[in-house]
Image (cartoon, rainbow, N blue to C red; front, side):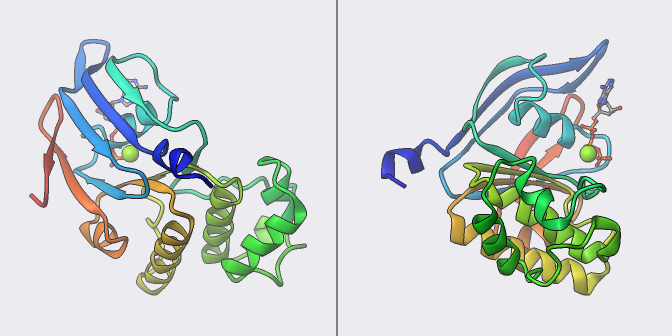
Length: 208
Ligand SMILES: Nc1ncnc2c1ncn2[C@@H]1O[C@H](COP(=O)(O)OP(=O)(O)OP(=O)(O)O)[C@@H](O)[C@H]1O
Ligand SMILES: [Mg+2]
């Protein structure tokens, strides 16, 4: 990948406001994420974290302001969104268009090389999370957006998946934005951390 393509992975967020009807959810928010950096956004339930992530991902255009993000975005959500009627390997290739060889390589990276023919219901929750991560990376994304991806895992599994996520992020050079309640998750990814608070919500750098 050329340097100029790598430079295009930066994210530029300038939101002046986001409302749902009469409710102003987001206020003025400015954030730049340089190529290859990982940023975490923490904040209490209902403050607007997922709303902000949907805007950054291009899923919500109904806001005041401007967002520039790379074209190839991979989302990772709290619940694994695997297709139950496809094998693990087909979950990596059919939706993403990735080739079998690439899918096999990524399955090996996440330690699922023996599970290619398994269906999602034949995998443990931790293995489903790892498969979801593999799917996020198999399409060689420029930006990874993660919305509470480590929730509802026991501590040991969460630690394992967080370490794996960090390794995949570092090896791929992807730019990453993590939204979470948990500061420990931001730390585990070595992320620069921002806090969302207030109504309408604004962003403060560092830990509050
Ligand atoms: N489609 C919608 N229509 C109306 N209000 C919405 C919509 N989506 C979100 N909201 C409201 O916007 C606010 C922020 O919601 P959001 O899902 O962004 O919060 P969050 O910080 O991600 O919370 P959590 O940590 O619980 O996931 C909430 O008050 C929510 O009720
Ligand atoms: Mg949310």
